[in-house]
Image 1 (cartoon, rainbow, N blue to C red):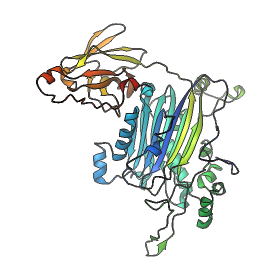
Image 2: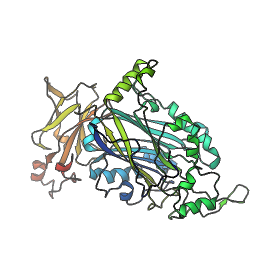
Image 3: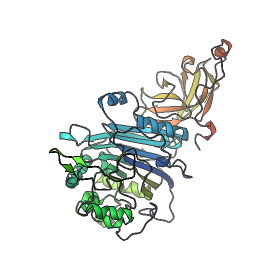
Image 4: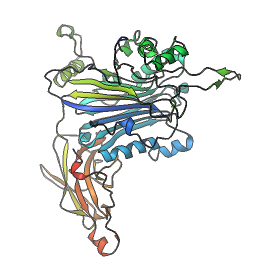
Length: 494
């Protein structure tokens, strides 16, 4: 995982797997967060957590949380409405041109995937899975949730885990991880298992501890920032030496304070005494790097003389990897000490993905035809640019500029049901005037493919005008834009 004599500072990392040279590819910035939030509600400001003031804005955000509050009443409401953490991240990122592409929750485990608007039509084959490993495998207090997707044709998988607690269960944690890797199955022949994906991120509260060293030595190393003296006794590092499955994953140097366990609302490591079953005082929790982010890039092709035993599927996969390279570099791996609401500190990883796009044009082009207002039925024009599996359940949604997720539409129209004309290039569908917002606003149109379970085309922003009829009849006493413009429409795709 790391060299014990390596010297890093400020969480900045060297190139680990992205090599310089002539490379025909596009670069994308990925910002990842893992945080055990200890059942608390979100803080008022997450600017530092998401690096919102950084001059380099990410293309993608992946946020994995553990111990999101899931009491009976809250969990029941969260199944109908977005939980407070999802709502907070969505409301923070939507004004900055990010859309929640996918999410999955299992009890206290929550995984969110956000993308800049411009990439959304190129994120396809989205699927999510979960695996329980908690009490008898039935209760979702421990386990893993994952989101897999195709990003410009490259299959990525993000696995957020909360594994077994306590010092003595290191082997059980590895067993749980391997069980999750083996049992999560996705539809489709190309990558049915997590390990089949081109790039896998494994992160979360993995609960590995620092063993052998005593409390005094551990805290002394933390105070002196000699973290490297603790690395050899980090359980995950130790387990990697004997577990082949773990050796496939890379991790940056742990050049930041252990992120567990803190007194609430402080930067002080665990100072409380705990009551045991028999009334005696239990030990304070020893600091540990429980919160981690690792990644695995699919192995490259073996030499030609060793490829004889490979099946046809594997050969095609290796040929595709060769034709469409994907490389990764970790630019930052650190914790954020400013957040004190939990007994864990959040951990962030910033990555550069460099890849050659397999898909360069969206599957569908669509546009709003003519002037739009609530005074007349409106027309949408769309044309398939490439073959795709269309369905009678495909629909086109009208969204305000700065929408938060695919479900945040104003209205929609079924593509097939409302089809009024067809030729080789352009298809027309109508949106009824009664569905168009009376007060107007800046909007976009999105084509949603039911088969692919994603948006496959987005129009340029356009203006929906206020209803003249409503104004004349005095239904709009003030000329207020009812779709409060979140961002300027001409900046939407920048």
